[in-house]
Length: 314
Image (tube, rainbow, N blue to C red; front, side, top):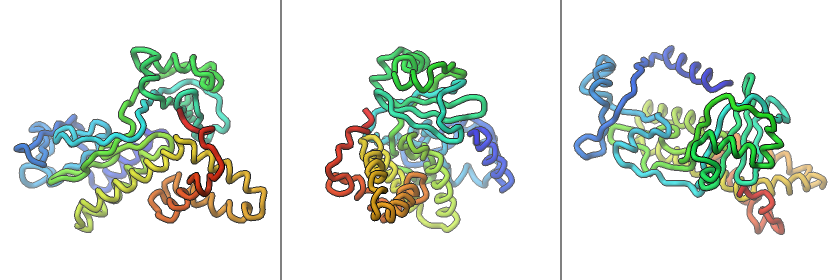
């Protein structure tokens, strides 16, 4: 589903459930140097009939990388191990192995995605920051030059014509040091974002929204919500790390080779289901499945005698 349509479905269902939409560009300020935040006066006035008292009891920051609460309270974001940037736009066409699937490919430096959309393709590049900066002074110039300079991109998108301006995100891997406070809570990308490689951002946001609603409904401390979201994000950091250092793909290659033997034919379907459940998000924090993945990518066990450098993302 196109993201705009998905967002419209969410909004319509929220309205049906009783939510009221007030469209404003809000501002947050810190109260008396403490841990509380307050909406700007115009926003408070626009929604004055939505609550009793001077303002809402709880402010949920779902503003993505804008991270309004974090900026108002000077809450630091902990960077992830990668220092990549993402450049992405829509183009008219690329090579597609199967139009129904997302395509990921390694390029000379970093990797790229291709997502088929109606009448166009979302083509994104995730590359080291200094590498992108060396290809131009603007996101448009960097993107266009990389499409022409990288041999893999020249093969995958030889005739691609860009249809939209290029967006660039620099803070891809990050995790807020705090997710809850006296009258606020962070949700989705405001709390943290791992990496686009497994498209986990929307899953983390939706699961976090469910966990937050459950915590509020049951009256449990929001610290439990914070612990759950941080555990989810840290699990994704670990999994994504196996992709970048080459161990995940090396493990998959070894598994395919083992399929020729009896033990492999018996075990491979069972292992594949459990690893797939991690990658699609159904069992990302499951201890047994994560333990199995760690065994498979460990140089002493699953990867014994294999060099993962062949699949490393540079």
